[in-house]
Length: 273
Ligand SMILES: [Zn+2]
Image (cartoon, rainbow, N blue to C red; front, side):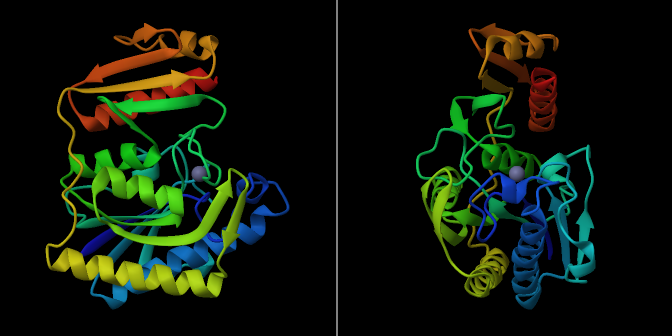
């Protein structure tokens, strides 16, 4: 059994502010270690339950947050940016299940730590076909393209609830109860590592029994629509051929999900420029 652990940083144990997840800031060093610890807990749980290959994708910022010298040696690490599949680097048909560790809610969510969608300065909302979603939905759809189900999410209570609402009853590891964008009641790392480890083990056991939600497969062709914060962002995004614009919303219709993911990333990169 082969597991891909797709990671982000905003949903890691103890994180409540941008400083803690921003390279260059003094606080960041502490939280890289906590990120590595949360991920190691997932690797331990998955391996204990019978996963024989674990790939980790470092999905936050420039993809170089996880401390490889402290990574559980049973896993391999996809790090660096840009990579072909970004937050989902390592996904292909050979993966049996995906775990989301350190995930956050989509932009605009109440009581959700550091809620945003891909770029906190650029993207107000994202729809896949008619489904309003966040990074979790984009990444789950990429997994679904390869026939792979998402089997676990860790993060605050809203991130876990949004993933469950979209995908069904995946294993959830709630590491903090958010009360605003920058405030939460956080469990200690000792406690959250135990929760993540047990959830990861349960997720792999359920996968082995065929007791996990279906892969997230969208109707094709796929329309990805981005609502940007300002019209100059939409101006730049519409330089991509075949986009359609309505106000600050730009949409692109493509035959399948890997192209939708590439198109989404390209629109955000141009718009941020
Ligand atoms: Zn992030």
